[in-house]
Length: 178
View 1 (tube, one colour):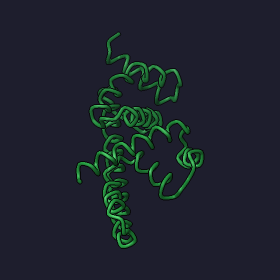
View 2 (cartoon, rainbow, N blue to C red):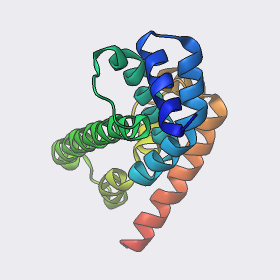
View 3 (cartoon, one colour):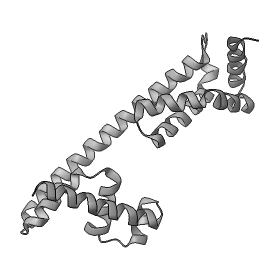
View 4 (cartoon, helix red, strand yellow):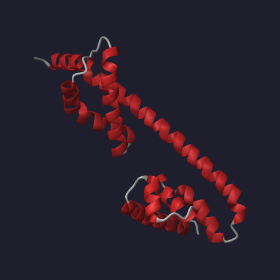
């Protein structure tokens, strides 16, 4: 039996919503899709999410798909669309965060009389999102480590390590701009 015959059989199994077909598709094409998604997104977690979304979309969309020429190509097409969606969503989120931070900086600039606080305010938008979140919750919102962990849905140890990394990064940014 050829690879094309196996793909046809596998696709027909997906159309009939056979769990074994989905398992086989994940085992057969999962590594290929992970590599492609990682190359596209440059983020292992985002790549895993995109691949999971791809298999869910394939599971749901197989019954509506006709004239399949290559299961691998079909899955890679779905993956590409998922990666594009992920990138668009991330870009929108970054723009929204940046606008918010710029607006807050403009509004609160007059509240800072200490030049160090002004430098800190201008350095904060340059932190990565997860580090910035921790700093905002811990120091601006005055949440405890436990409260910050609960708010972000992460372990307390992660809050502590992100806090340390954020402070180190902020110090570097502020010294560079000194």
